[in-house]
Image 1 (tube, rainbow, N blue to C red):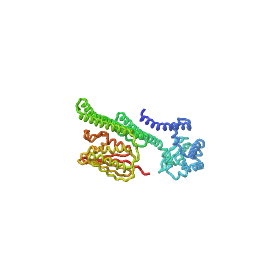
Image 2 (image 1 turned 90 degrees about the horizontal axis):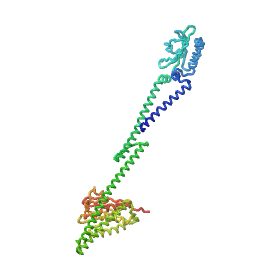
Image 3 (image 1 turned 90 degrees about the vertical axis):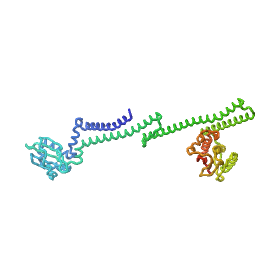
Image 4 (image 1 turned 135 degrees about the vertical axis):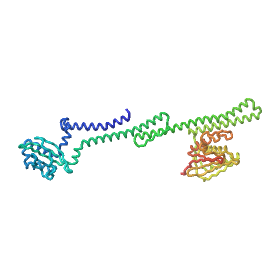
Length: 487
């Protein structure tokens, strides 16, 4: 059974069961008080045909009894006065008619001559006609007629009661009001049932459709459910799951693409030195190096290519350990100013051999220190410097290292005047095996892992590395890391 049908049945039961219960209780009450279910039809009539005042009911019973046993009393003025006194407190009175003339009427009725006119005609002896209604002005009156014969005269006695407007309205229009109320209840119930069912079913249908899309492998959609009820919370949880799955698949796809690129890059970079080594070895075996000088040249070339191969394997191994968080760092507190001064001297000495001007610009006082692994941090700076040297193209190459404090960060910016890069290239230079020179020429060399390794090391130091560049003008690599607070 579907949820829609279950909801419709449950809402229908909420309407039908109370109605059936009311009817059953009413029937039981009728049987209990009336003694016979056949009297059900007369329940409303009996209720309708009552004045609603005990004194009036008592007078009606007395008059009915007297008309049968002692009809002469109903023509006794003193007796009629007593009845009138009892009825006046309930806005009721008596009219007695003998033949076509009025024999007696209560003082309350004497003030209203209209009530005396057009009285119902005599029916038959010992008959009772209940609740003949008349309206005089804005007031409703109810007549109860008693007919009897006395001394060959046709006598009619009327009890006339002023009826309460609300009681009159309810008594007259109760069936219509009851039916209208029942119809309003049913229509309201149906509208609410339809609204609630659609509100629930529509969202469940959206969840079912979303689940089917996910089953078919389509995660490129969005499930929007607003609200605070359980279904909305389920929808938001479902959307969160879909979003996470989509992100996971995208990451997995990116990993797969990176894996393919990594394999291709490793294959290419390993093949180049291996091919060279194999060619020179074949030359030695075939006797091409037939002199000691040629043999020495071949051996030195083989050793150089083996060194390149070893360097590539070491960098690849280091990057893998960093990527898997398996490279341990030997952190220590290092004072920045002496460390940077020593590093500047080393870089000046190395770059001078390559005819590159090195300009240190350290704006830092003594005292600030950072938590670093000296060797790994030096590797970061060396990789940046090597990358700058590799892409130098100016007649007067120069590298500047600027160091300063910025808030609670120590910032080191290394700027060169090399070939520079376009904006769309800068964002990729920290990706593994990415090279600005796609030809991987021997001139630029490099493994494509230097800056990727630098990024991994800086992240391990809770630092950051960024790049900015302008084509033909040069590149700036900026690294920053937190300064230790003074205690």
